[in-house]
Image (cartoon, rainbow, N blue to C red):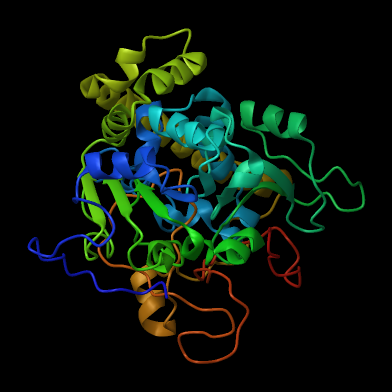
Length: 419
């Protein structure tokens, strides 16, 4: 299970469970009480209306803009090895993506509504922005496949770190360190970086969609494995509704797949209206947005685009500044030690991702998404206990070989998993 063909269903093929492949048919299925165990899978698209920039879009994507800066490659900001040597760019980015600055969208509120009505079996999300929690979805109903900003810990001793100190560090763009005096290791949020294992909760619940009687997939490109395999675990005959800007994965290949293409919030609005929940949904949304117009957030995409342009420009500038600060810090350290120029060990040339992949066979895992847009090709899945080469391994994401001069001892410990 989890793997399926991506060929679209022939339009002449009748649905097995629904009376039609339409949003109205899905609404009727819910109103009739036939959907009592709904699994929701979310990604990038449900948070863009909140003003959070995505990572992969060509114009506003964070990666596209970070590519202009002095990083070995844009994704290095989420690489555990690079973080060990230079954590400041990540914390500069974290300051701009601080979840406390953003509010839930209609899509987040719809998931909350499903939970309130006792219909939500589980929410699987790729996002790290915690907006599902802020919308009021219970913690026990959420599986954060790529971790989140909800918790943080030392990457050396795994000791938890106080929430208030973390918020203070992110607010000030400071790098927090372990509160245990004998450790003083770097602290980071429980976000899955390159080289770290996915959360245990994801693996424990991965096959749960097989127990669902309806799956709703919203705002995800379904290119990052193993998350992309989740819809495939749904049993044949179980309706699957895709609310997304485009058709993705194998969705649309089964008789009871319904594609609602376009903006996520608008799609959710159509579904809620067809069920008869629109008034409840908008009332719930207003509880989180009492200080701003609902129309401004959900109905004016041009304003959203302008806000995203401003946000990505600021993020790029701030991360660029942090890289210059980091470089100046090394220069100042050399001068304070009266080291002649060139005394520091020369770092080997940093290889780009394509070169590393061709030489090592590494299948790169995309870092945790605040948002992921469409990539050029899907990642292959590494199942527990096996690698691409067939060797037994623990399931974790492979890290790129980032060559940087470390101020840490050469025999320092390898990165540990943060679960």
